[in-house]
Amino acid sequence: MRTMPLGGALVLGALTASLAATPALRAQGNPYPATLQFGTGLINIPVAWISPTNADVWLQTSGKGIPYYVDPSEMNFATKVNTNVSIETHWLGRFSVGVSAYSQNPEYGFFGQALLLKPGQFAFLPAIAVGVRNVGKYDKEDRLLVAHDIELQGTGYEEIVGSYADGFKTSPTVYGVASQNFQLGGAEAGVSLGFGNGLFSDDGDLGREYNDKGQLASGLFLGTRFVFHPSLNTTLTVLGENDGWDWNAGVVGDWRGISLGVYGTELEEGGKDCTTNPSGLCRVYNYSKLNVSLGYNGNIVDISRGVILRGRVTDLTREAKRLRAEITARERRIIRLEAELRRAQAGELAEIARRRQELERQITDEREAIKRAVERLEQLERGRPPATPPSNPPQSSGTIPPSY
Image (tube, rainbow, N blue to C red; front, top):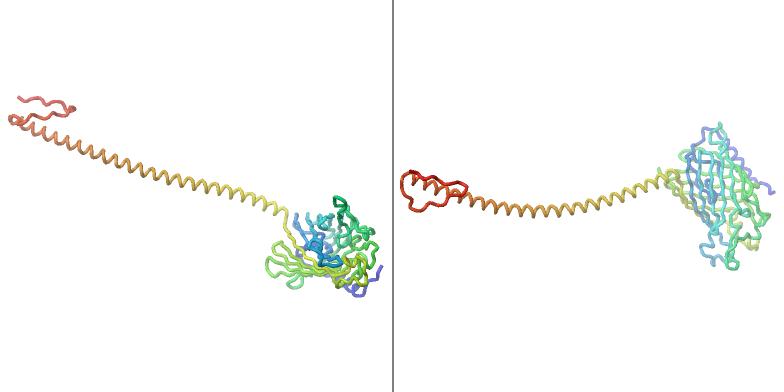
């Protein structure tokens, strides 16, 4: 085993002292982002933290640039970037479970964590958790999760393992980690320290071809973060760590649960140089790499409620559309009925006018007849013979008896 460098010993001592700091410095804790490959944490390493909100979920996709061709210019985007997708859920403030797809092939593995001590549960003690990674059939995975692959053989693709990876035994990987958060003015700081086997310590007997420098001690990992709030709904997190093999650093921005991260990994290795080590492994390990991640953090219950509400909104929208169509149709019918009513009223008024004229004519005739009858009556009463024969009275009035 390699001895720990003096600088690494100093960093380890400082982190250990930070974990035992006074409770007065302890912060409540902002949510941790998702790691590049396995649920919440820093960049690659886990932390002792579980969301206090039940059913929180992290969905993360990331890409790591690995130009492993002799001539990287001959590579396309799909062959140059190894992608990863993971999903993790947190439950009861005590444990988390998730699954990760390691590449485009894809291989996959399950992971999970149990929080043994919550922050501040016992005086000044930090939060403590135990967990597992790479639970599944892909037991030859390396730290970059590229040891398993697929190869075209005959008429189909078959899963293969690179000959260099025969010495790995990384499923399952078990770890323990302690974490502590502190409030520093307007920012929050956190430190984590842990130990694990498998992905954190197994080099597959490759020695320096697998990791030339950067390891503090076999299986030991540590890291820190600083969280700032540029605005009410945004956070900016600066991360630094040693993942058991290499030094990594990066920054993550989050807005309302949508996060974007940019990281540099294997920073201590510098650029790729295969002149001193012409083996094919120098094109995969021992040089700095660029990583990008895109993630989303939400709550399953809230999302399901949102889906239900969106369904109800869709139904209500559909109902409102139907009602608006019905209202439009009825308004058109009302317009037609009003037009018919106006025509009917106009027809009735014309009929009434004609009837009125007829009645007025009949009344005039009756009055003229009454006038003539009165005149005849007066003549009879005066004993004068009529100049002309009397007119025929209306049939309904009867006959006037003669006078003597």
